[in-house]
Image (cartoon, rainbow, N blue to C red; front, side, top):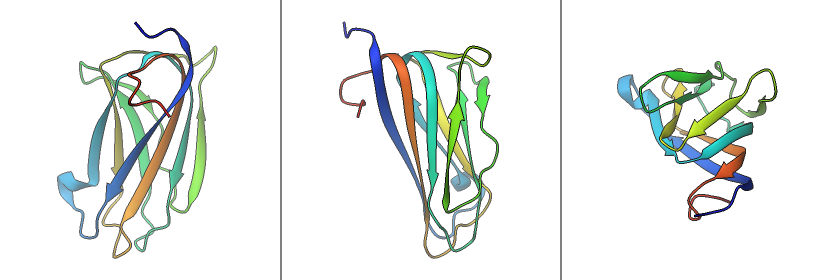
Length: 125
């Protein structure tokens, strides 16, 4: 078993030109067992000037973090601490929703999740 430690995991979402309907939402598993300390969200520039929202959803479909929509071409820090703790059990997902078609440029959103706990070795930075 992997020991408890401070670590980071990068999750990248890529949305292509013409995205609509269900293609505006992507979900990726984050197999972290432990406490999230910070999520650094980097939204690239996109022709359609669309926003991006990150959420953490547990294995039962319950949203345990809703980051609200953030503008393109900027980066953001979602801080967690004593008053807003988020402890994950290893079966949770990070969901990214964009506000519409990003246009010809496409749209990449990177989320770097800093945590104290365990994650599979191939997922940690």
